[in-house]
Length: 289
Image (cartoon, rainbow, N blue to C red; front, side, top):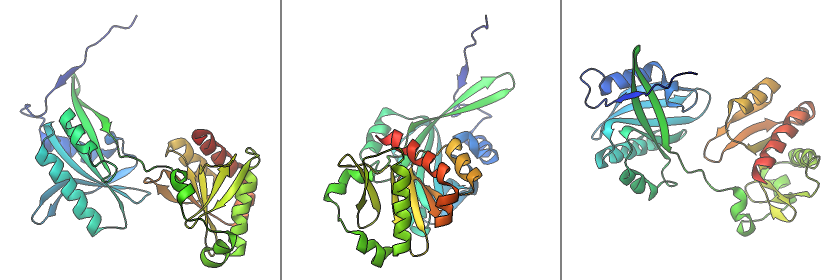
């Protein structure tokens, strides 16, 4: 029977060799250890005049996400929180084309910190990672635990009954065309293969779905002038990334704010990739129903 080995954790704050600069370098060499997805280091110790230096700026390789990362050894404190939010605010105003997330890394994420962040999480996208340093014969290992994640926005159907309803003519004349609205009809036809009671719902910003008389937007359609944008509500995983990339579908990006895979579809795409689209829609439906 395998023997049990108790892991020995150490405090980086009090260690003479493994200090904050060492931790910075480890993350720079391999940012994947943070488990934030496929990211690269865009900048390090980025100067913000009058505000100090941002420890790390990370950017998604195939997306529009940026992470403003502040590192503190020991426990979180008020100044750490303020600096992190300040750097996030500066970056989002300077580069509004990206989706910005504030990230705090510390050895001890205190309950007081979580209570403070809880007051405004949902308004400011912020996450907290607690780092543990583990001593081994080969060296120091690092383990990052996400103790606070960004608050995902509510489902679109949460407020649909009080939203601004439109009709088919609105989408055919003002937002899309009769041809691209018919592409939304084709998505409805695919969904009907596994949900017999599904109907379309025309709203000002999207064409959603009702199931058994209630809004259930596991996916939404946005007809445009030359194509249809289909947004499927699924968590971002390697499995779904592989399904989409291997199929040849035109994926615009993943919308972290709403949790949607965004696809650009033509009539040919819907015909050629019928089974893949159905599979993704059905998976999203099963997660939402």
